[in-house]
Image 1 (cartoon, rainbow, N blue to C red):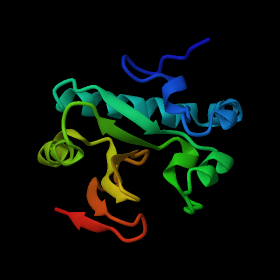
Image 2 (spheres, rainbow, N blue to C red):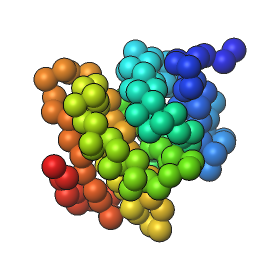
Image 3 (cartoon, rainbow, N blue to C red):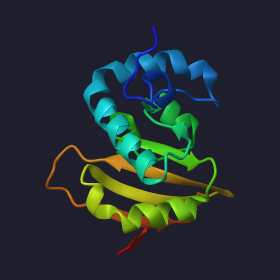
Length: 154
């Protein structure tokens, strides 16, 4: 049965892996422990979609258990994907840079967002969106070209 987290983002979408379909079943089982943060993440993604003019957004990665995290090449042992606090997304009809700029200009409306990062790694580009679970955490914007060093954008 398909779980709908929010209007445009489902549990299935946020736990899928196109590149590693053999790992999806176990990934979804492992994600069950983190449903509360997954739901909070989906509502943040809804807000982002609205701020981008209801832009269709493709989620390339959401929750990743340790096996899937390793399979996609992540070496981060504390990745926010491991606890359902992050999604990597690509807008369908605008550039990632334009989407980033819109979100940066609307940062005051994104009180539930912990981080927004433009990741340009290995010839690909996407937005890494992270939800905050502690309201006192800051909202920050970064860029990276190697996934290791980050430059904050104010």
